[in-house]
Length: 266
Image (cartoon, rainbow, N blue to C red; front, side, top):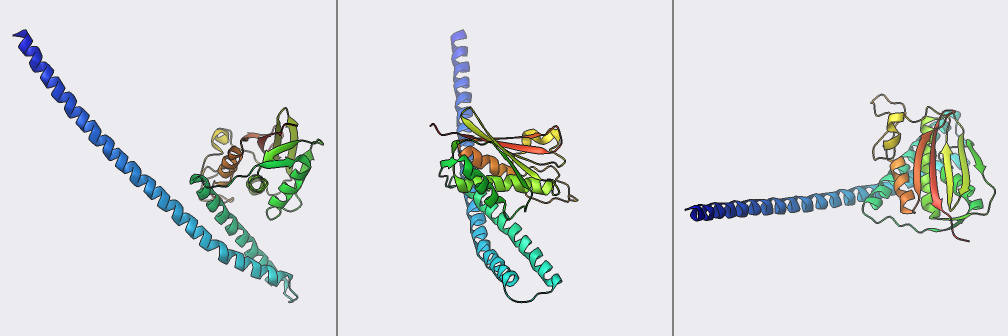
């Protein structure tokens, strides 16, 4: 009798296990299908964003070129007209930077961002930074670079983009401050910092400041507008070049962003 009862219980258990297995298999297949649909949706979103951004780039470039021609041409423009054109030009530069950010972000997320590291001599760093910041800040960069012959590995164009993001961030939050660029060699790394004398980073945000869409002030009434993508992009690009980036507040006030990149073996 006991044997018969055990056989019945065993059969019931096997039936339940089979039912649960079938249920789990069905749920797994549904999850797989949902995951595939989400991947397709994400790909379509990336393709759409990339297409729209490319379509925006050409007219923005044409408009910017036309305004530059008006401002630099021989036509006599009154003071108010010149100021209006310069204002429009600055807004076009801002929109162009947004488009470039979106294109870079789309390429990074899709794994299609070309990175070509090459040896960069320490003495060329100033020109890379200056060129990247030319349209962002004028006359407020102060350099404190050590005098050595270090050569480090990075993609010059990508590195310039990183500095444009960091300098643009400092300009937004500390518009009246000089932006200090510090650089030194530490063991087998070069460490380059971008500092300002603004309000600094809220202590509770330092650990998350490089995350996507994170901003120090997300209120609707904020005076400094942005997308919260610049620092995220800087981190992604630096890590793509096998570097690191960190943020901290200075004891004297202001924020400091430091990047570290590998030095080439001599």
